Structures are given as C-alpha cells and as structure tokens.
Image 1: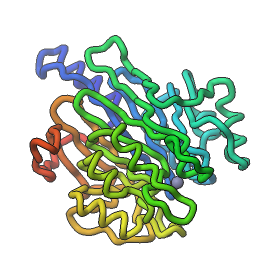
Image 2: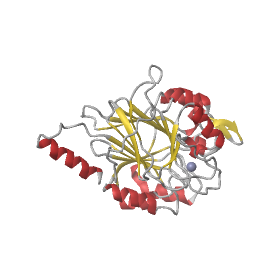
Image 3: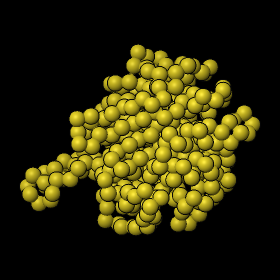
Image 4: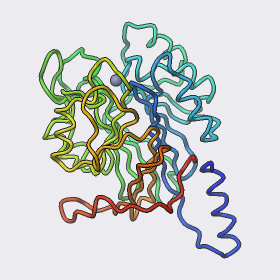
Length: 331
Ligand SMILES: [Zn+2]
C-alpha cells in the first residue's frame, strides 16, 4: 500500500469518526542501491528530500523504488560528496523526478565524468551548503522537519580526500533525530583524517545513524558513537563489494555501544550476528516525532519497534519490542 493511499485511508476513517486523526509521520527510506548510498525523506507535509541518489550504472534500483513510493518530484537533493556511489544516479533520478527547489552540496568540484554529469543535471538549482544552514520543511506547521547541515569540506581540517569532505546533515523532527554523513572518516590512517570527532558535538544525540562510509574500518570511532549515541545504525552496503564493507572493526564498535544495525545487503566483510544485525533490503524508519519510531523493511523478517523516544543518558528503553501488526510503509 502506498504511503499516500494509506494515509488517505486514515484520513477517511478519521472523518467518519471511527479513529482519531493522528499526526502524519516522518518517513526515512534507506534504499537498497547496492554498494552506494541513497535515502529519501518524506516529510509529513509531503516534501521530498533525497540524500544521495545511488550507484552509477545501478540506477534502476533508486528509480524503481522512488516510483513505487508514488512521488512525482524531489524538493531538495542533498549530495554528501562527489563519488559515483553517491551521486551516480543524479541524471536518471532527477530526469524522472524533477528537482523543484535546490541541490545542496559541498561546493567545489571533482575530476570525474560522474561529477560533471551531476553538475550539469542540477544546473542553476545548485547551492553550496553552509555549516549551520537549516532547511525547514513545513515551517508553518506545529512540528516542522528541520535538516541542519552541521559540517562539510573536512570541518576545518585540511584534506583533499573526497570522503572526508562529506557534507553531514542532521534531521530533526520533534524528539527524533537522524544523521547522515556520507563517507566521513574517524581515524587518521592512509590518507584519511579523523573528521568525526570534531563533528560529533554538532550532531548531538540521534536515534538513527546512517553509518559513515558503509561501515569501513576507518569510520565510526568511539568518540563519535559515544557522542551521538544512536539506537540503530543503517549500513548501506552492496553484496560482494570489493572493499570488505562492513568491516569487522566498525561493526564491533557499533555492537560495543549497543547499536542494532540494519544492512541494505549482505556486504562482503563482517557476517551479520543474530539479533543485532539485520540484512533488510530497503529500510524504512517512521516516526511521529513525539513518542516513538519504528523500522520496517521489505524483507519479511526484520522488524523493530516501536522504540520509545528517550534520551539515553536518562533512560534506556527496551531495544526490541516486536509486533507483527504494524503497517509496512511501501508494502
Ligand atoms: Zn561511498
């Protein structure tokens, strides 16, 4: 059932007086795009925001998924950085779902044909993000969605590593928060730097963490995890990838902090552990922003929540509270 249709049913029932009218939820869809990133936010007011758009030459996946959602445009495209596993489907996706407001990115340029195609696709809608910039969706509503850009371009550290230049965006909706930071690193190794430690305080505590850099060995350091204290981690990863993602070290750090993880595919590194790692395909997080959030997937088995929205410093709610009666968005 499409989200639009489902909510029109709820609205119709509410008008008939059979169920109370509830606030519409925020939806975050972490699409299975293979070894890349692509997530779509649908705000309660219907605004659509795309965080990266998928892997080059594998664009049927995001295009098909977005078509299944029934959307007809994209309000904002937010690019984490310019690698082809993050902006590889800009032309296909934005060709099918026109960009209406702005494409926000880290500015600058990158020497690749994928970057050139991206720049040519978003044209004059392109805007360079600014640290502290806020995109407010539903500004006149009781509970707007705010997307804050908390860092980009290495957060003041000098680097030319494209991963470490990733733009970091935090989604706020009432008491719910999520962070997406592209392929950011948290360790000084090879030509990577520890960008995560300086960015973490600007992120604050979140419920949902789109795990940096597909859970590479150099992402998700202890300072980062101890500061953002995520309840769940989304690992966007491709079957048989040549990078060994998700890396055992990264996954172990997540486990040590009690983070339950959802993977889009099986990857080619660490093995998922029963009860705390779920290979889930397309992953959908839904929240009312007030009381809880829920995770669903288009695979049958994984199901998570509703999880009470609480600050972990004061209260740790049960991590698994499963039910089979919740609707599955997009099902
Ligand atoms: Zn990547």
